[in-house]
Image 1 (tube, one colour):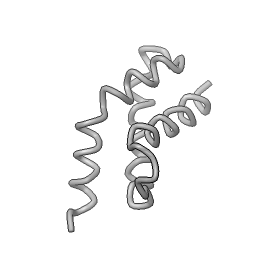
Image 2: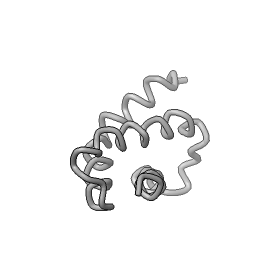
Image 3: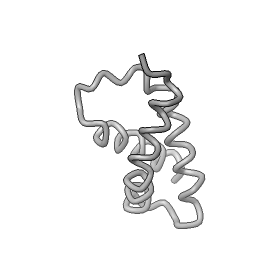
Image 4: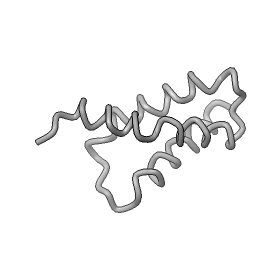
Length: 73
């Protein structure tokens, strides 16, 4: 079994740009994007063990981006 920290690292490395672009498209100001990205990956860290794969990973990540963007506006 792969340790969760390695899974998180892979999700982060493979999807960082997707999360960044998604947050920008959702209206997060350029100066606020780094903090918003951090917020997204904090949620991912907490919820990744619950991800069941019923949707694409990017769909799940975009849902988290939507909630983070909404909470920041």
